[in-house]
Image 1 (cartoon, rainbow, N blue to C red):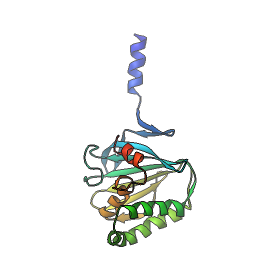
Image 2 (image 1 turned 180 degrees about the vertical axis):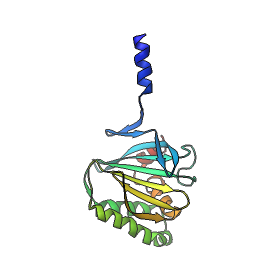
Image 3 (image 1 turned 60 degrees about the vertical axis):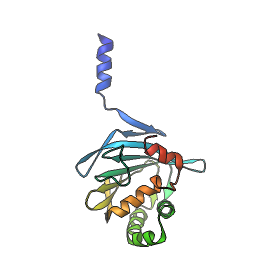
Image 4 (image 1 turned 30 degrees about the vertical axis):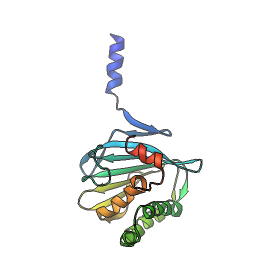
Length: 183
């Protein structure tokens, strides 16, 4: 009886769906009033350094993560200090690898807006939580440690460009792409 009671109590506790480099990601997230499911989580490495743990939340984890409609979240948890310029440059380089010059030109004003948000934080510090949320019908919302950062960045094409950093044909890291896709 005691074992059964302990088992029931353990099942009632909130479960973490994924753990990456000591960072726990829940199996669900809420963005713009929508409940999202964890698609996958993985580790971004640079040379032999762990840079950040990340998770992707979408409405339908089996559908195309980039093109499916609805709210989405890219959850980044910093594992080391990275200055804002380096972090922003890495994001832009990831976009550039997956888009042609004309697309990058069209994204420039919004990339500048994201760079300004990152510059305002000066440094992505170890332990910092950075969420990049897509609110359907409108914009990308950047949240740093649970607080809104900067103004929303308009355009679904911009959010899709962000997703392609990790999920595009030339992802920044192949095993991270596989992990985010639930592999």
